[in-house]
Image 1 (tube, rainbow, N blue to C red):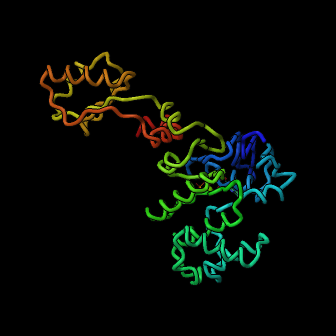
Image 2 (image 1 turned 180 degrees about the vertical axis):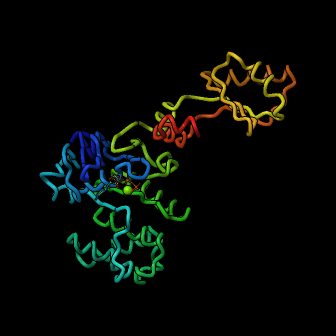
Length: 316
Ligand SMILES: Nc1ncnc2c1ncn2[C@@H]1O[C@H](COP(=O)(O)OP(=O)(O)OP(=O)(O)O)[C@@H](O)[C@H]1O
Ligand SMILES: [Mg+2]
């Protein structure tokens, strides 16, 4: 074992003339949550489909727990559980029957299948709906049932494609909790998401995918660091102080001014010292502030900075 649950090298996939994956390299350490983050059409689902043997790549290599998806797909399938972007639930069956069926397909005994299905229904708060036909489930319930299905065989690698899209806040927290439990039990989780907050909360490492390429990778802290460190943010009490303040702060760094919000932002290296100095200076000059503080970039800003073409950023 290499310590990696999934290793992807030079992965390429074209659909006709459209390049969906343009040389993706990823190494996902075992026992961690890895977040694949990207806007619509970035290639997240395509990556997931290749990884789970549902789609053949044009080039590159994908190993799951050491097994090659191209030459040993059976072995890969034994090691992986998938909850796809669109819930794969059989509407004619009840919630219980959906999970029971999956367990039986994995070769579990009737007794074991019943126990596994009941346990998963409980973990996803579906016990009350267990004996109702899935056709009558809400979108969130279907999603939770599908997630439960991915966990039936307790695979060492679980792949979740946008697991919380369309879920209400409570259901989202439930899913997060289950992801936490899985990793606590040693499972490797690869999840795709468009929610930066989700990647920030859950993922040990994050790769940002855009136009079929990994454009950044690291822990959420590392990514935030990349977007520049701390910033000092001041909100003026009155707009008419702005020219005076800009003059006082000259030389501190590149000032970013948002007149409508009466806000001045400046990147700083020693934030605490800079904040103290600026407050002293403004006090001495009787400038009234509505708000002052240190801020680190949010993952949202990192993401937008990485995925927005420069021209758009300027006009925005
Ligand atoms: N079967 C297909 N045939 C043709 N084009 C496809 C096919 N599957 C994906 N694509 C294209 O490949 C690109 C990547 O799609 P993919 O579904 O991997 O994106 P995604 O990151 O999962 O996006 P989303 O956030 O919308 O789910 C898109 O431009 C998409 O239109
Ligand atoms: Mg997708």
